[in-house]
Image (cartoon, rainbow, N blue to C red; front, side):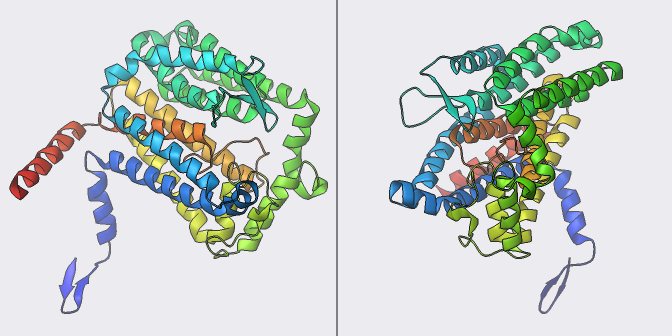
Length: 408
């Protein structure tokens, strides 16, 4: 950085050098996760308010009803994530079996009449009589990741034997995914399967076994798609949303209209026309369409860049550790966020079929927010295991303590 009478002048390559210095810091991954997730969460609150003002006013008489509920869930989730970041990894691992048992139990409860609630064609909600509904499948993703990472870490070198790879991970995973498929929630089931495949890839399973798993999943996926008429229509409808505009193509077509209306620079925050009732699920699965309409290409690219930064940091954590649990858990959570983001963006852009998958940290939904924010907390805890991270955090605490003593 050179200086002149008018101020500092940025020399060529200084930005790249600053980025390089930042990435060499032990806490780079920690701050990338914290910064990107925090900005996505904040942007999500803004877009939930913007996309639901009309709906909130017409249904409940004031424009901030859905925003207030989302804010409450964020305020519930943040202390949970903070506690997780302070939790030793051994405690998290000790809870792994309990988490997966509770997840299976909650998924099973959705099949009990009176408790299980159908929303959007899927019986994946629990109603315990309060103002909020619980969606167990969201928490089940995190529970499955932590438990699978724990099991494989305990097996050590035994994972080189294909039988040890399957038992008990395969049957327990099939129970969780099977219960989710039985609810009619194909989107979440697909995400769970892809999470498991990403963890197996990072674990380094034999190529033949990984190929067999991918092939088996593909065959089952094709069967489930074409075994039910409405699923077939829904999946194939994305090929030409306007061919059946009034039925299977309605959501995808109106999502395209939203982006077309926004153009390059967007209509401005709060100025969406699709949020007035034309676009279904505009605050949940299709919130990115409203964001693209109002904030245009700059806003859309900002979201993509934030998710890419999150994904890079998560993979960086997985690559820089020698601890099998940390590597697999970081890869699983990163895979969850990135897979779900790609599916959601592809769905909103009519590149993929409409499968009902929310955009992590951005879409409206209490269960989704709590689960994803808690997952961010786990990833932050894992980031502290990077080489030099604990020492850097201790040095930060020492500096803060000295400043407080000096101020006193």
